Every structure is written in structure tokens, then in C-alpha cells.
Length: 244
Image 1 (cartoon, rainbow, N blue to C red):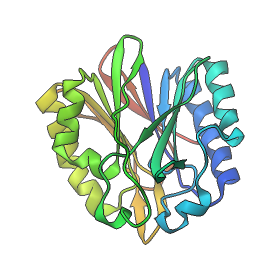
Image 2: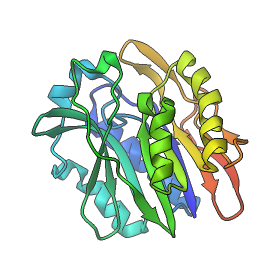
Image 3: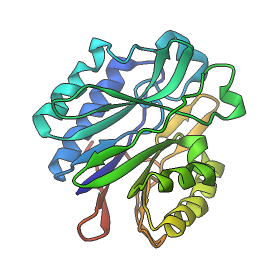
Image 4: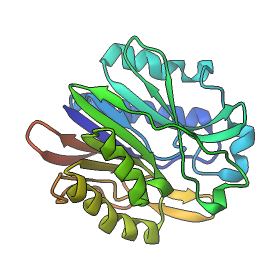
């Protein structure tokens, strides 16, 4: 199985522009024979908590239909980031689209204190199954809490999918935490980060993949757009950048 973490430079609040860039990166993942591709935190709007309420969508919104069509056409599992309206408020959501199946939502369960004025927390972990593997998504802040990874391990996760929007200091923490997660639980870890302005900070990319022994297998740079491709069949990873 090949899993791609997409790295992109979102345009704040511009859903149409971000959808177009997502589709470019999905096609890049297709060119790498990917089975799964997922995107950074709130990738379709940019990480903009103050705008989240006005930008939020219902999970059934037809503007997400294009991703279902691509999932059906390519037989690929696709995860995109979006503020999603729930009964209790707006969550930091990842909408997962599977070939010929209904949409599934993963809502970030552990919110950073700065996010509490704008978002509500999810209450349940999503587990995705593909090619006999169990994939557990984690969104930014919670992915740096070992108890979240511990919970993923109790769900027999084979791979930890970290969808983030992180500046320099956050990536520094990630580069020590994710290999610790991998080696503690013998679990593959792959991170998708964005690049460029996000809220009041600059996201610095460096999306990466780690082996179950905690070895860094591949890492993108801090500015490019593209995908990190993790191949579970041979335990290798590589980087493929978008041509501009």
C-alpha cells in the first residue's frame, strides 16, 4: 500500500482555489500509484480559526462532491481538512472519502487552548481500513500528545496519520515526538503539514514519514508543494514535488 501526505500552500478562506490545488495534488498522488492521500489540518480553508464559523460546511455539502468523484475514479481513500458544522458547533474536521462509500468525519478530539473559543471537540476516534491495514488519523495538537497515540495503538493501528499546521517550533517538537510514537508502538507515522501563512504564524512544511522503528524515511522541504509517499510493502518513502 502507498500512502501520500500532501503538502500545500493554502489560500486563506478561498475554498475554490484550495479545491483546485487539492485536485492537483490528488493527481500527483495518482501518478505515484497511491492508495491513500491525506492533507494538512483545515487544508481547504487554511488554518484560520477566526474565519472558521463563516467557512464551515456540512459534511454533505455538494462542494465536496468533486473529491468523492475522484475517490470513485481512482479507487483512492482521500482525507481533506475542513471546518465542519456539527450540532454543538464547528469542529476541526477531516472528511474521508472512500470509493463507492459514504463520507466519514473525523473531528479533532483534543483542542489546543487557543482553539477553544472557535471550535468544539470531537468525541470519537475514526479508524480507517485499507489493504488490510488500520490507519488512525490525528490532527495537529492532539498528535503531539502521547496518550492519543497510545489510544491509537489500543485500536490496533498500523499507521498514524498526522494532519497538521505547524510553525518552526511545532515542527521541532514533531521531529522528536513522531519517531518516539513510531518506536513505542511499532507503528508507521506520516505527517502532512502546510506551508505559508496560517492564522498568526507561518507553517513550515517538512512533511515526513517514519518507520516503525522511528527512522526518518523521507522529508519534504519547508516551501515546496507535493507529496511524501510511504510504501508499506518495502518500508520506503520518497518525495514527489508539484511542477510549477
